[in-house]
Image (cartoon, rainbow, N blue to C red; front, side, top):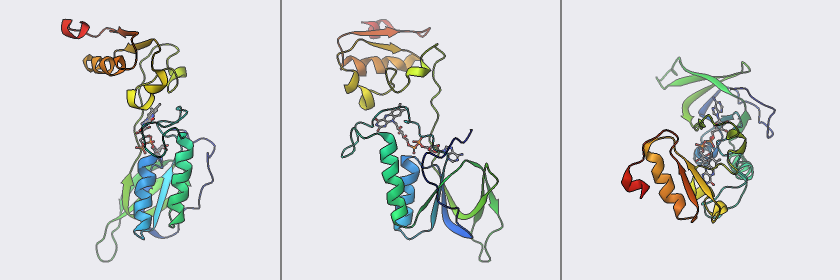
Length: 202
Ligand SMILES: Cc1cc2nc3c(=O)[nH]c(=O)nc-3n(C[C@H](O)[C@H](O)[C@H](O)COP(=O)(O)OP(=O)(O)OC[C@H]3O[C@@H](n4cnc5c(N)ncnc54)[C@H](O)[C@@H]3O)c2cc1C
């Protein structure tokens, strides 16, 4: 994974051994860091700055923050983790390996970043998210997160009453058709080489 220009100000990597390194500074990693920091653990989040929902204009279906841009939620998350002493470092982790334990036998890990820096931690929290693998349809990727959406709860309201096409990627895709059907009268199911039984078609 290529690390781009920092999308936010990065803290310095801590010296010595920290209680926890959190790999990934999306919603999951920052929430983990917040809890750890509030428990008075020394915590360093290392984040390469590519959250899954980056293409989306706003996060929906999340009370209090419904309609907030993903970048704003993460900005506030970093601010809150930092408020309790957590650090957020922009970088990509390339390895996390067992290191020699402490004198009393407690675990130690060495976490190494792509730029060669490393940090020692007592524990590691992996919160690297997942990567969406999009169907190979020309033009589809450019519209991902805008007019190509995957989740009726995240984006369904925004596309309500519009003509909606469901692009099947497997047998379970029909479930998406039923969910989006609630949002529009004008729905087309593209089987895209998958089977569709008579009941579902009806
Ligand atoms: C287009 C789109 C829109 C969405 N909209 C909504 C919505 O409206 N409402 C909703 O509830 N959910 C929505 N989701 C789902 C939501 O994005 C995910 O549930 C959420 O992002 C998961 O958070 P996460 O922290 O697990 O992972 P991510 O947000 O993906 O964060 C993982 C972080 O880890 C970092 N990382 C990965 N590998 C490394 C490494 N080796 N070293 C350092 N850092 C690393 C990444 O750069 C990234 O910053 C949407 C998803 C998509 C794709």
